Image (cartoon, rainbow, N blue to C red; front, top):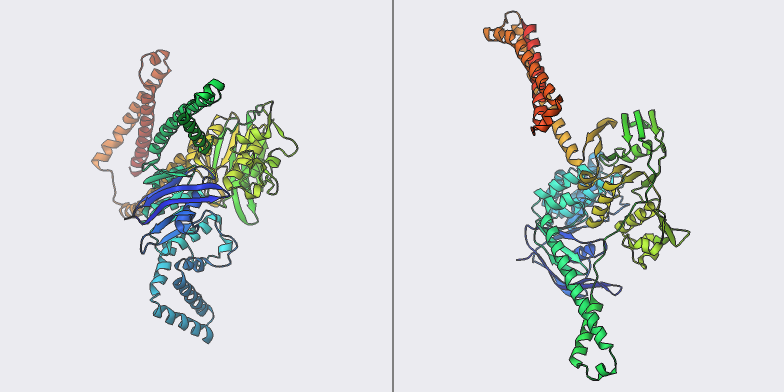
Length: 632
């Protein structure tokens, strides 16, 4: 039996049907990803499932005893409460009792008075009367499970911590169905990875909206898509969805072509001369009217964005050189002894937890901030395009048009003039939407406006601070392709793991105490590097412990310890083994230096791999030789 079902649901805003005759059933244990372009109504659908919006037609049925919780993409601000108080509100009236009891208990610990003691007794009696003690345990469990401090003051938290608190509020009631609207928005990579693992372990049924392709692939067991008011159930993984979707769109395109061709033929027939009209078939006329109405009702697909960068002259080969750069705000060290050489064509990703200093690093590299110590030199002929994640370059009180081209109805792209309306249509803004104020646009639309504004100016250094926030998957993939093909240099702050993997050639990762490490490759390579570092750290702990024990044993036995017969033989043979390894390395190197070798078809990678193995062997032989000689 379905936990939640939607039957023949329709919902309109300002005359446009956002949801049109929708039917869907949500079964226990499913993790459903809801896909769709920006603005098609995904949030509206989730709010309708949550009961926040009432449909114009149809019904939403929730099973008896089924609890539904909704996590909005818009995180509330200006809440003067601590985390415990906010989370307890997720339990309704009984949560209010828990909140009052917890507050009185804390007050009693710090300042004992008879008034506070009476207050505590009052809440204790109310909890007894309403069987509410279990809710205190539930709040404690969710706080512990989600690594939250109940004393956190909400207004002082980072965006990621606020999201964690609000998610805990949604989860504290143990919902049977959890509705998540863009849960990863504005989270750093580590928090996204944590959330992904947390949701995978959660037994709750999920319906979620996300543009994070890695989370989508790992989490979803079923995909439904909202497209032009209709809901399509693909019931498959993401890769299969992409293939099937392409096939469906291709078939739809062909059907439309046949229909439009037939309609054109019928329009020609109806417009023939007097003779034709005397003998025309009335049934055929009725069929034509029906075809006209069908064509009128057709909802065209939202087109693909057609973003293009304005070409610029090349910068100098040396773009940025930073040497031993440090930066601090007061006593807080943000960046420590950082050096970097950026050359033309580099595409560098910058990752780290929220607040670690990623934007500060970019501003230092661009010369907007002065380092506390060290030097930064910029190359020649730089034309910089800077995408600010806060979108401060946009005037909220002006229209899309006025922001992109304030003084003209034309833009110039690569030497060619284009009307502003045509240009904005490439960024998916209709003529009506182009005259809309920025303040009423969605986050994804605002990002597209900023890209449209910036792409008019020529650039050879792109500095992009979180450009992927709020963009739908199709626009993300286009931006990805655009940056990959860009011939200039790119500095990219990004928390989209797939985007990083597909775009950057190296990654700057913030570590502890202001240290920044450079890793060749994207997110996967950074993850591998961290895994190796963690393993090495654990091995070092074990080795240090073993060494300590060994040293103590050696100290106690140092007076009597001598080489065994086997060790004496090893001491004699080791120099020969080192020499043999050196000879084999020299032989392989001479073979690789011979031009005729490459015509033989033999794989040089295997020989290079053998050289590495031999060099490692030599090193281990030498270490063993030193050890035995010292012992002898």
